[in-house]
Image (cartoon, rainbow, N blue to C red):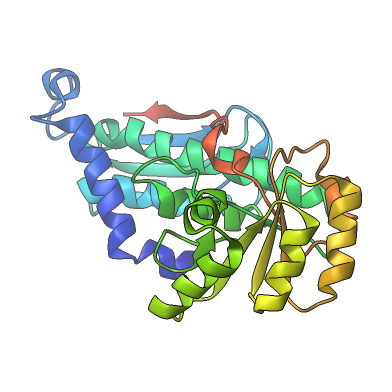
Length: 281
């Protein structure tokens, strides 16, 4: 996915927008102190352990301001890295490198934080059938990078947005009056795959009668999830959601669900601390 993703015009637009936001009319500090002809060498260094993600994004960020920059990656996205590890060596014109520094580090740090958190969840459910899914609880305008980082960390992407899957949740059901009516309306207007949020085992049975492709078990107990998996018996994909933590994800996986989704991968992640160290003018 990574090679295709970095070529995406949408990803390039994210980076360009981030640079415009930061630079504005110009980097007043760098432009007043650093000669236009100056060059520098620097290293990207991890200041904490974790899973690195976004080195290609960092490289593209620097390259957008200096297309001749030399960016030598010493790690690969998805690597488990240690504090103090050198991630890349960079050489190029000083002004654009210093101007792009913060944007590159922000994107790299956020993606690495997401990948690190995802890897923790994935490791907890290892040797079960359950796959870890993200949600739409991403930073506005950064969704493609957030979801890319989840994949680098070993998780899988749920729907990208509102347009690629019909997910009928509690408010939709309450508005329509029932699961049956909500599904009927959805099928009248779209051929997209349908997932339905089930709050009770009765809801699960109703979903099975309707032949929906996905059933989301919302905030159910372990016993309820185990019974739901028994009822479904492979007739639909089963996803567990709600109050999922690193501490309880293993017990959820052991109920036999196919997927476990959690917004914590992206909505409250701590960025991995990465710095740029200038080592030579």
